[in-house]
Amino acid sequence: MKKAMTTRTTPAALSQKQLDDRFAAAIHAQFPAAVRLRRHLHQHPELAFSEHRTAETIAAELKRIGCHVTTGVGRTGVLGILEGSQDGPVAAVRSDMDALPVKEQTGLPFASKIDGVMHACGHDAHMSVVVSTAAVMAKMRPHWAGTVKFIFQPSEEVLPGGALGMIADKVLEDPKVSTIFGLHVDPWIPVGRVGLKDGVMMSQTDDFDLTVIGQPGHAARPHEACDAIYVASQIVTALQSIVSRNTDPLQPAVLSIGKIEGGRARNIVADNVGIEGTVRALDAKAAQNIRRRIEKVANGVAKALGGQVKLDYLVGTPPLVNAKSVNDLYRRAARQAFGAKAIVEINEPVMGGEDFAHYLQYVKGAMMRLGVRNPEIGAKFAWHHPAFTIDENALEIGMRIICGALLYHQSSTLTA
Image (cartoon, rainbow, N blue to C red; front, side, top):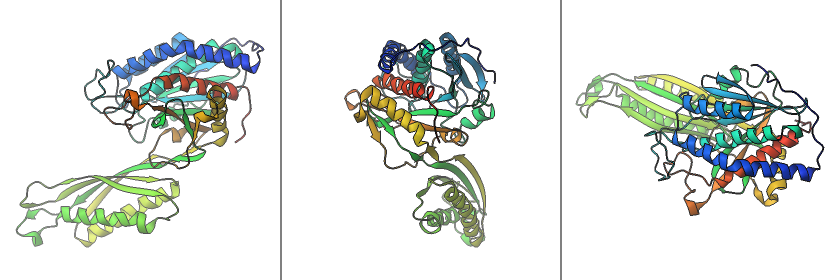
């Protein structure tokens, strides 16, 4: 990864209020462009590892801003590097890029033009905020030091996630990142507010496929066959004992079966059944224990009933653990821009997963939840819903808080 080369100059001396006012003015001026970009990206969504047009758009915007740009990172990702006025800390801001296989039902004039594909999780907003943050930081380059990397990552929605490829392509190296900032829109937090949580915020997310293998036969002569449907039903029931009887009750965990499919006709004993499930845990060791128990329980039940099983287990994202020191930068920026009322302290973690957690295995960071809820304009639906949308005023709010957090980071030394 090549480092951007920029002529360094001494930052202009301004009071904190003057600096805050200049940033606020630059962000407000950037807001219309942020809205246009978000709507353009919304109209042209692309699925995981197919974000070719999206990457071209992002790369063009970053080059226009003045970033050193690398494309094809982690397959379809983009990295932009921007240097400040003098040597200093190295930070990163990450956005995801991929959309979902959802048919849009928002009725918006800028609805998706790709049938059956939609930005139903707000990644279009994430990209717009991060590109616009880069634009503001470029305009305000004389007033901050160090380097900021803008990471645009593919395939957040599909396990094991695109973060691993970005990390393998050394987005956190050369120069080495000391702190990473993330954001995600939240349809349950009102626009104008942001949610923050120190420590564990989201769970480890693993997926598994079980293939149950029996012996086919006539439904009138079941004793001559091994009914894979019956075996599968017993396995599904037995798997529920793993959380209730094999997991520490003080360690939250979920094991859910989302799909079961098998059989060919009502009068044929099924010889093959597929089971698809997911595991969530706030502790990595608990997740490892559940994996071991799934294999043991499924094999044991199948063997006892005369069948066999094949387990394909996909270890996904680790638990997402936010650093308080990084959240404190978000808090400081939010208070300065909007007052303490803008901060929602999230008390409980959620059992959803986010592959931003992979970056946090290598560098301290935190993910901010950006409030986008406004029922008056229909911004009230959950992520992945076909009518999901946002209050676009959140884009300016997101820029204010991320720019503020970056500014404080680039002029201070964090402790772990």
